[in-house]
View (tube, rainbow, N blue to C red):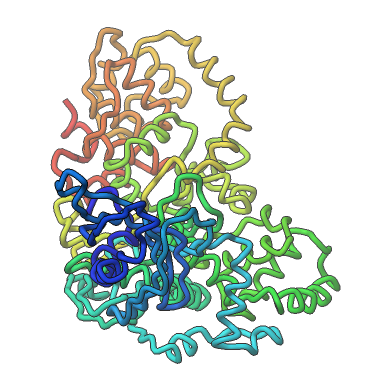
Length: 609
């Protein structure tokens, strides 16, 4: 790409220069007074100054190009000289896959132009949020006017077919859920993955083909599939010219518009530092939602459902809006997230308080099993730090706030989520992204025992920024944590002092010690010596056998001069401590064996130094 030039300038230089220069060669002689020359002169050269006021209408567009036109002449000293003047050219063009036409409508010496146009000079439509309803209505008037007259589910798949778009299902578009929908603006090859074997391949797709990842329907809902199709249809309507221009300007350039499923990427409001690509995705999100749920008839349907719901539910209550969202989503064939967005957009601000999943399927989840927690602890320093603080504990396959309001210890000694935590899962537990990974291509990272039959496997990935709700609630409960920490800090003891305190409090004798920790009776005696320096794994075996939490374990390690590191080995032992509260060392050892990770050994005398 040429630095310093926008796409409209590059387009004009490449496809308009000859037409414009031909006009100047022919007509420049008519502008003697403008050039302030009284001698013979001729066209010499011209250079682009700038372009202005791009206006797009479908595949056609018009704009103004300003060139610095240079003429040559013989001066009074009989020397060749040049003089330049700016000229403005009003140009029109049509591009639909190929350049169909280019014409100079008019031209004149330059004068300042008022700002107008409806697109950036890189061919990105300028669309404000206040325009989206009108653009959605314009689309429906053209393709399905019935939706503007009465509440009805918009048959977006049928509309796409009538527009000449082709839909293809059955291939995963990414290994990690990066893309759920894609539209191709040219005949091209695109990378896809077999949903059974996970094998990648280059698929030939033609211009106007929408690819839909099967996971949209399998793991989300019909509403999410409808939104994905509508999203890609909007790209075709509004961004096809953008893609065609790119391909004309840059050899072998193939542009595809894709939709990412992550909630932070489904942008409903514009950002401060967005790229033009960000705005393209925002256009598709906002207009697609309004196509599926047009404002002209949405209020009528809301009123119809509300009259019935008010008979059993308190108006404007959370229960009322949850029921309203559910019924509207079913009626319109939309996702609950899209429905919530549309309700808020027409003035129902109360829905901001409604907690619903980001999507109808768990693109995000709060649940993670022990083995996948281990892999994430290996990869993610942020999660390791959160776990080591002890502010979160593992219960019922969730990392929950370590507080009595969120976690209770059952009769079996195993932590469980409270009813309060189950009802408020988004603020009581950590949240993870579901990421699809090709296990076969990453075999060195994963246990052959656990995932020997898997190809594409779902793993959970942790990010701090996804967990603001849980952190905020944890802070509300932090006073008790701080009080406990102050009490702990008063105890200035050695490792063996603290170990003896723990065993005394639990009433553990030498027989119990051996059975619980799988360490020898001789080790029990060593634990009574103040100068005894145990190994890292001995401490982990002791903590596992005593069923200590991660904070106490970290404290004991610290007193002996150790700390949890970032190695796979340490992540495995951290998981064995944090994720198996209330369970025996034998259960934890079975977990460690199944990991089949080099350096990770079962706990007990045989493996302790």
